[in-house]
Amino acid sequence: MKPIPPLPTVEGDVRRPGPQRTPNLLNYLSAALLALTLTSCSTAQFYHQAVAGQVQILAGRKPVATLLADPHTEPRLRDRLKLTQDLRAFAEKELGLPSGKAYATYTDLHRPHVAWVVVAAPEFSTRPYQWHYPILGKLDYRGYFKEADAKECARSLKARGLETAVGGVDAYSSLGYFNDPLLNTFIHDPDPDLAELLFHELTHRKVFLSGDTEFNEAFATATGQEGARRWLRSRQRWDDLRKYEKSCSQEQYFAEAVLETKRQLEEIYQQPLLSKSVMRQRKQALLKALGNTIRHMPELAGHKGYPKWATQPINHARMNTVSAYHRLVPAFQQLLATCHGDLARFYEKIAAMKSLSQAERRGALGVPHQ
Image 1 (cartoon, rainbow, N blue to C red):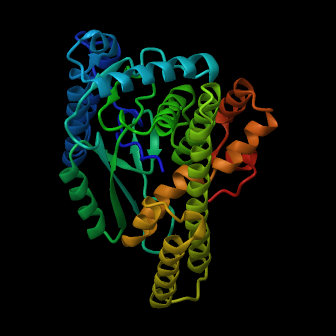
Image 2 (image 1 turned 60 degrees about the horizontal axis):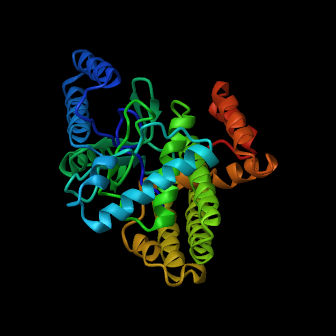
């Protein structure tokens, strides 16, 4: 499962600065500082930490070329850096993704995650709580560079009666506003996972639809997976491809179990005559059953992550993080199939949906709007 992009600054992937400060960075910071003077105290604090965190990341990056030429670069890191440059070239030439100068630098953040994301939802609705951001529109998450800040945000939302979840994020995309760097938080992922992650984040630079988190993330997930498959085939890594296909299948089994429970919950909440106590009882029964299903699902046998996910309390917020990345993936895969695997045509069809409403986009994909 991909991590949810954390920052409200440009949606998804962390970058750092080289020795020079780019006009894009200066323009962004100027706009952000102006926004601080026009918002409430709590909102100002949020944007302040977002800007400070982004600047810190940008200030720490080092060119990959420099690290590869440095004899003191640790061999394991050197190998990973070489691999990422191969992936960048493949993304540009074979997938039509705009790598540009993204991932041509590296930063060690000396922490396990680049950021922490807060997601929330009402007790009797699976619709995600949303935040509004300049340029990006409404998004289903709030990102922080410090875990303590994310937890504090979650506490305040809980006090308002919302269900919440806080999770660490290993990568996110700035949509081309910055030249995103490679990070220690994901550089050592297994090769297929690293390939999918980089292709996923570069997809956000290709097409991003303001205010439609589910569409953007599922599109990037489908493209990232397809890209990883093509890269593995091109390198004739057949055993790795077989294992990766199994991993993708397990991911889909997991997602379908969550999505089915979410659908059943929505049916309960749409019954106007049910009391809150009855809805609460039925809800808890379904969530308990979901946990048992995931822990004992034969298709997930041998996978540690998903059964572990089910051992923690399940709520709407946690389910929505799964839904955001996976509900529309089969529809995007089908759309790519109708394009006979032609990614250029696929991207054109996606870009053409920018002018549509969310409901119209779902209709174009052949899935119900929620």
